Image 1 (cartoon, rainbow, N blue to C red):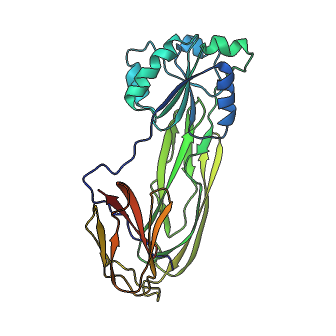
Image 2 (cartoon, rainbow, N blue to C red; image 1 turned 180 degrees about the vertical axis):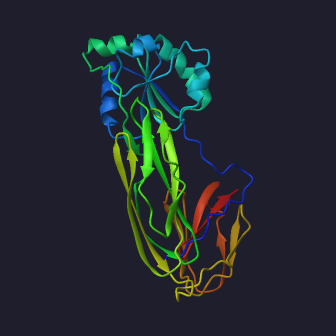
Image 3 (spheres, rainbow, N blue to C red; image 1 turned 180 degrees about the horizontal axis):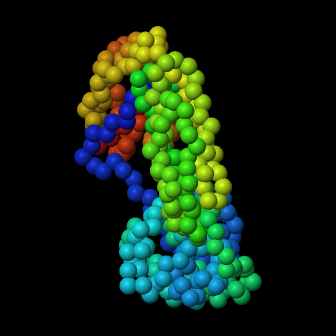
Length: 315
């Protein structure tokens, strides 16, 4: 049986990783390739920073608009989701070029600027439109696979929907949920282009058995289907007890990590990098062990104890 405990951080250094920002100028040809490569990517946004008079009659398919000349242009950009991929453009490249440092300062992660703007785009006879439409897409996985939940516990699954289009998307309803499922979905919610909506489905079983949920979010552009399968098990199950008493200290450490209270069924301990590269493996035949980590470079490591996981810091 796989046993896991919460990842624990004890460190005097920041443990989060900030993704490097990507800001790059692309030709119209490269932008066309970028758009095609991200056709089904829910986190891809085409951002037109021209005026409404330029944008409304003629724009890239599904592009959203924020007017560079608006007094609150920076604030409008700041409301956008920073982790999405943005392709920005204007008429000839000046306004979009000036938008790049603003988005960089606001913390956007990945932004591409179309050199030459719409003028360059049209010289290649790439498509534009006057149409507006909503495009609902799942950002999260719409299928939550089978797993076991003990009776009396609450399992929460997060679902995220985005609007890839440039017309408002209305989330009309979530089809009724049978017990023991419930939700915080709010009906008749409107999502603007490039924005997300997050809701949760909760599962709290009161008796043993398998419960399956096949439902859908009704939207103004069609249904988005979801699936949620759970198995309720008794709290008196005979499964192996959860090893919550293992001590792991000191953390961070420069030389040795001491482990105490190791269950008898644990036969090995592994140290690996945070991206899964295994570095050391230690056989275990006792309830305590001292791990020599003095040869490891300074950094963060993952220690796996019979599939229990804790984050270690080598100082």
